[in-house]
Length: 133
Image (cartoon, rainbow, N blue to C red):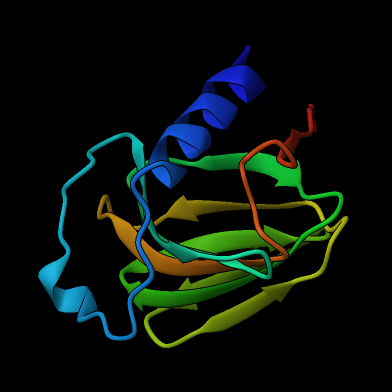
């Protein structure tokens, strides 16, 4: 069910995407307390770029066919990447190869703001949730 909702969200976002050559990330703000907000920035057949506001945990998942590059532009969090847990903060770049289980939890009750670049083009259908209980 969650996968269907997320896929629908990503597909609906792509219908409004326009390519941009310049974006001031300070001008994009939202306060998704206890939720996650994804805004598509640009995409083509080779990659998809999003700004993601993380107000709650991103559950463990992986992308079977996509590499994801995440740049933290605001906030702090605790990330799990292939079983290793570490802190992330503004200025950090995290490279997540295809097939790597990852998750993130914002710290200090604040929203974590990141830029995510997925390669190749990402429509949301390649996000596979993992139950790690």
